[in-house]
Length: 443
Image (cartoon, rainbow, N blue to C red):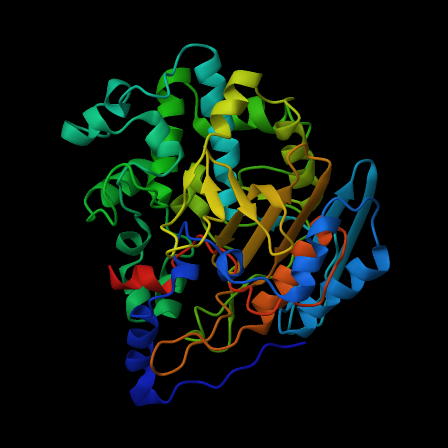
């Protein structure tokens, strides 16, 4: 089902961008919880909380819930759900809105910031070998990269849990996103960016939060990749491939060698909150702008394999896994509300509307979104990829409009994990989106 919207009138384009840029949307802040994580639960969700450990997979309900996500306006999606040894894979919608080519559940997909979990595992492997100390200043390892006071006071742990006080580099790397998003993304399609340059851009940008407070920034994980390079003497992508991806037994997960995805995949459409109209395909893109923070490609099956192996202790020792699951609040809650999203080291734990807490990560790149969550022991898992990004819409005053796509996505993921798939979880959207939320455009 195509997701349609009207084009802004010529004289209103800049005003509309300004309205989006000024929207105070806590639920879309990078590192903030989805709105449904802190909103009062619907009665049906509250009632299903006790059923969060339901065993078995209701294939018919999963299929209907995934189809509801497409019918709500998402172009296409594919997913893999597991309960112990039982597995279900499904797809809904279209991979190409021009040809009508159908989605397939085994498609490869750009997974964005889920890459951070892989990078964090690699760093923690070096911790286990005694080559890296989580609480040592990053300047002890790469003084030329992070000099001065920040090099002395920002620790490796602060990079991995995003409490470094270092800003994101996305806007400095794509400055025209504020005025002409489509042109900015077109111009950057084949541009090569060095990781050192990305770090420089992030360090030169005003910090959005004081050191010690969680504030999600891709710069942290590009620095983590360069730390890996320093202590291992290897290209960080190559090290992660050999010591994390292959160790986990993943067959369709990789850092792309060009702007193209190697295997079968969907087109990936970016709307940028309606300012790119019609939404444009960015499945071909040089991912050097993301690197060890977000460049990887994977499948939903591989992501479930990865997180199950990680949470069951196959990829890290018990001490390192405990460090990874040591979390900080990802946002400041409203008075009387519970923090429903806590960030560890490249891994977060999130309370879903049904009441269950789950471990995993989400990812967003231009045109592609991914979400992978697991129960504590990795037994019950759900991973989903979808091919329309920043589909949310805002009024002329910059306030969010009702979001049936996000509601349907939450309904699918919450139900897949709880065992009671639903078509929607009203008021539970938007989901976390890790790439340039409207609030960031104000900085």
